[in-house]
Length: 397
Image (cartoon, rainbow, N blue to C red; front, side, top):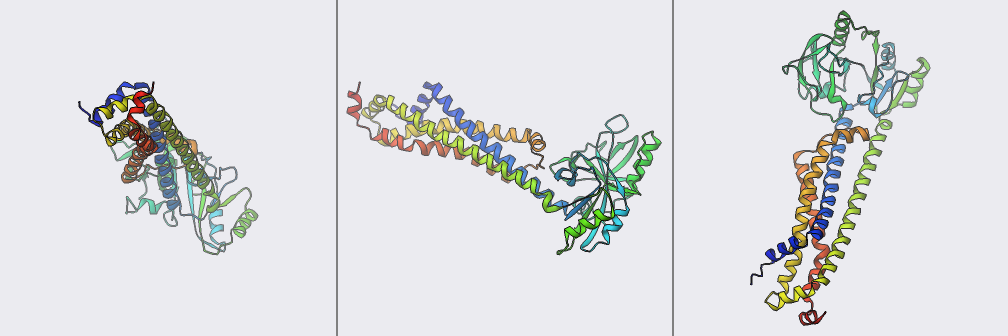
């Protein structure tokens, strides 16, 4: 008689299909939650890290009525396209504690026949900018000439060289690395080019009331180490009506809280499903071992050793767990990749896919953890089966 533990375990798994499918499904769910949760958590961490490095500003000034939270500060859409006078820039530059003040200008193209696509157009001042240009220099070291654009990673280019805005073609000199938010769908250029776009748009029949030479959308500040934020805010509000002023530490608190909450939820879900999986494995295999006492006793009679019986039980669990963990890991990673944009929008957080090495590590952990948990939870049962009294089991009706 062939007493191969692997063959007997496989036969038992196929014979008890409902039990096997139930346990495999449970392992699939555990691996799915683990893989998807860890990919999303790592992606949010990476996205936040990238943005916090590239923002580089200690504080921001916005016009009254503009949305002043993480989304607007990080230029992530919901721009209200409100403007204020450049007098604010000159004023804030002379305040004590302000080392650099750089203006930015926002407006949008149209998603119609006049433009290849709708994008946020972000103008910056090359002479004072310390926020956008360090990011640009990673892919383009030359000066951004008038009439040329730098585009985000998700902007689709015409012939990889130009983009049409308001019926005029503009040369694209570089495409930026992903940021994990709506900055990836933005266009960056200097103020001269912003004014050129406005003028060409007017010639094509599109009227904009602003003039980028006179107006700005925001002022980003780099402050000295001992700068008095209360003083700067007070001076701004005294001199100008309706301005909003906020420090970076306040702006990022929402991101940190959301990331922390998401990570807590992921850990709680993983702990819950692991606990359920362990309990289910113990209960199912305990009942199964009790029902199959005679089967195991007969195997002992025909020559199976205690070690062989232990292997049979553990191989059954391993086979079921491996199948479930494989499906769960694959589908979990696919789900995280496919729904990353929806998750980022729902959480209002930037998201960047983890590196290949981190993704592989997560895949290995998502596969191995449920399998090992299942094996450890049934190890005691395998010992009990192997050491059961053969003749008592055969006499038991």
